[in-house]
Image (cartoon, rainbow, N blue to C red; front, top):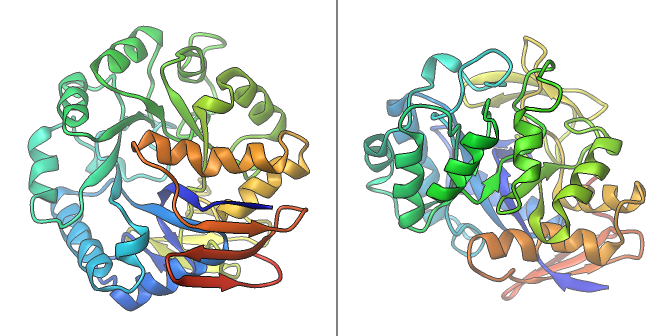
Amino acid sequence: METAGLFDLQINGYAGVDFNDAALTADALDHALEAMLLAGVTQCLPTLITATEAELAERFTALDRAVAGSRLGPLMVPGYHLEGPFLSPEPGFHGCHPREAMVPPDVGLIERVTRRLRLPVRLLTVAPEREGAEAVIAWTAARGMVVAIGHSDCRADVVARAVAAGAVMSTHLGNGLPQMLPKLDNPIMAQLAEDRLTAGFIADGVHVPVPALRAMLRAKGWARSVLVTDAVAAAAAPPGRYGFAGMAIDAAADGTVRNPAGALAGSALTLDRAVRNLLDWGIADLPQAVVLASENPAALLGGLPRGRVRWDADGRVRECALDDIVVGREMACD
C-alpha cells in the first residue's frame, strides 16, 4: 500500500538528538530527520518546551540556524511548535515542564523570541484559563498560527471561550494532567465534548491506555483526531540516558521515558509505530490510521501531506520518498 508521508506536529527530539539543545547543529538535525524519513515522516514541527525567555530565544536561534543549514530541514520543517511557557504551573498539570519558567500568556514574549527566525511558529500550546490567554489566542490565530489547549485545568466554559478566540486543537489529550480529577467536569471531558477541537493523541499504550484511547478516538471521530509522538531524543535510539531541554531523562527498555522524579518526559514513540499500534490494537485499519498521521495534521496547518510512503501489509514502512530523496529498509523503527 502507498500513502502520503506522515506529519508529526509534536516532536521534541529524535534518534539521540534534542531539538531543545542550544548547541544543536545542522548535521545533528539531518541525522534526526533522516531517521524520521525511515519511519515514513516527511514533515514535522520541531517542538520547544517551557523555558525562560532567554533560553527560548537561544534555543529557537539554534534550531532555526540548524534547519536553514541542513540538507533535509528546508524540505521537512515548515515551522515550529512552541509548547509553553504559557501552561498551568499547578501540580500535575505542568508535567515535566519546569514550572518556575511558566509565565502568563504574553504576546510580547512570542514576538521577542521569534522575531529573527527564518521560519514561523506554526503551533502554540497554551493553558486558556491563565490570565491573558484569550487575547494571546486571538492574536496568534489571526496571524495564522494553530492554537492548541494543553497542560490546562480548563472546564467547558473556558474551552468554549478559547475556541471562540481561535483555539482549534488539543495537545496530547489525556496527558499533562494530574491523576486525580473531578469525575465528569474535567479538562478531558470538556475538550472531548467540543466538536470544534481536533485532538492529538500519543498512541504508545503508556500515555493513554488502549481502552481509553479507543473511547477517545470514538468520541472525537476520525476527522478530528491526529496522531503525534511527543518524541524526545530517545525515539529511534537504544534505552539509556538522554538530554531534554536541559534535564536528564531515562529511556527504559519498555519504551517509557521519565525524568529523575519519575514523571513521563515525552516518549520514545515513532510515528510509524503509532500507526501500527492502532492496527495491532484493532482500533483502525492501515488507511484509517495513516490519515490520522498524515492528512489530518497537514490539514490543521492548511496544507497537504508531502512525499509518499510504501507500507507492508502489517504496517511497516518499506520505503519513503520526498522529492528526489528515497530511503528504505525492510522494517521501520519499533
